[in-house]
Length: 236
Image 1: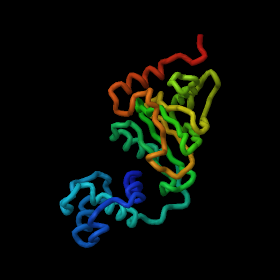
Image 2: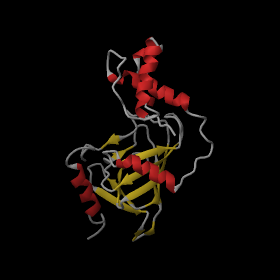
Image 3: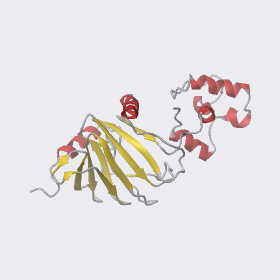
Image 4: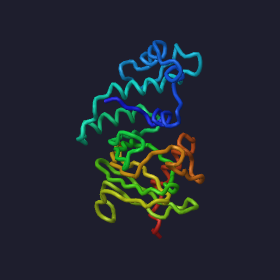
């Protein structure tokens, strides 16, 4: 299956992309895009045909990928093999996590996807407030902690999903719009099924907490570990 990234979909909405595609969609632009494809690879390669940014022809490559796709099956199976394939992508990502979308477009509603998180993955605390969106998680494999915060970054609740907890076995959670939260894996691999309203617009999809380290910040790993090690908010 060929994947078109959110970045390329966003470029399509903004009307940006390969200048050769929009201004002169002929052999030069097509050769450039085909050189990027490398048999359906998502790896970006330098564009030899474009005189400007090497990224100019990435959008055309994405368009060709879409044209190359067969009509998606109306039934998509959630299987162990799918878990393994998404895990392989997560292992190659510096973020230690990867999504697999079941929806086909950024403006679909609702969005449904797998989120495979490997141990050490960090998601900066965030909320979906403007536009307001709820979010549901169901753990299919492994165990995660969903941590809830107040406006000042204090932990107000923690829910252990996918394993035994003082509340019994909790499989999932539904989070109302505007609630600060993060999700952190406790096992080597955790697989979550997530649902939230569309469309996906990167500029407004998440509001990240300024009181928490950003992804890639050297302090992020220690902050995440401190959250996992902290006592229950109502303890003591």
